[in-house]
Length: 351
Image (tube, rainbow, N blue to C red; front, top):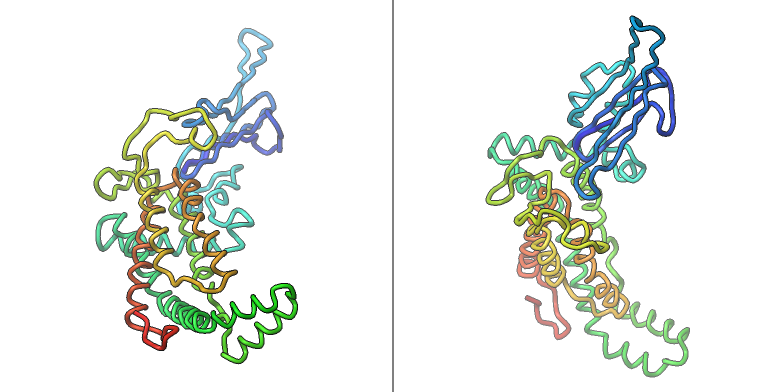
C-alpha cells in the first residue's frame, strides 16, 4: 500500500539507469533525477517480507573547490487517491494514476474504477456511524446482499422448480438411456421431446446472481486490498489490521521452503473460516438431478479450497466480507426454501 519509485527529471531512462519504482498495496515511493549519473534500482532485501529501493550517486570533481550537485525528486508515502490528486508533484505527474483502481485491463473490464470507490465510500459512511471499520464492512456486505436478494430468491426458486420437474421425469430419462444407449443422436431427440412434453427447461439466468456479485467481489478485492483507509484499523480480538492477514499466530518467517507453503508466515484463521462457510453454503444450495449439472456441482466443490489457498495471505477485511456474505447466503437459502417452497416429485411442497 505504499508507492516507492525513482525517476529522472525530464528524461525517460530505461533499465538500471536513473529510475526505479516500488509499488505495493498501500504505499508509493518515487525518486526522479535530472542527472544521468544517478543510478537507481529497486531491490528485494527479503524474499518474503521487505522490498527496499536504492540510489547510487556518482560525483566527478574537477578541482578541489568545485561544487557538484545532483537534482532529484523523491516521493515516499501512502497511495491515498485524494492526497495524490490534490498535490502538485512536478515531474512526477504520473503518481496520481498509480493509486487508481482501474489501472489494469482486468479491473477496467469489471468497472472497478467505479465500484471500488463506491464501496470505500459505503465503508467510510458506516464507520462514521458504528465507529468500527470491521463492523462497517459487515454492514456494507449486508446492504449489498440485501440489494441482490430479489434476484437470488427468483433464481433459487426457479432452480428448485426445475430440479423438482427433473426428479419427476427421471425414471423416464433412465428408460430412454437404457433403450437408446447405443444411439446418442436418437436418445438426444427423445430426451428433448420428453422435456417439451413436461415443460422442462433450465431456468434462464441461473448464474445471474453470481455474475452480478462478481464485479462487486472484484471491486471489494481491489478496495480492501489496496486502500490506505483500512491500514492498521482494528476489528476485534486478534484482528488488529484489516488491510493485512489476520495473523492469529506469527511464525516469524516461512514455515517451510516449499512451493505454496513458503509464503505462509502466519496462521490466519479468517480464511479457514471462510472456506468452511463456503462449503456449507454450497451444501445449502439445491442439488441438481441433471447429470451434467450434478457433475459441474461436484467440480465446483473444489473451488472454495482453491480460493482459500489463493486468498490466504490477503487482507482480513476481504475475508470478513466473504465470511459475512457466506453466512447471509446460508440463512438466505433456508428462508427461501421455507418461505417459497416448490412441489417435490411426489407433489408435496418441499421444505
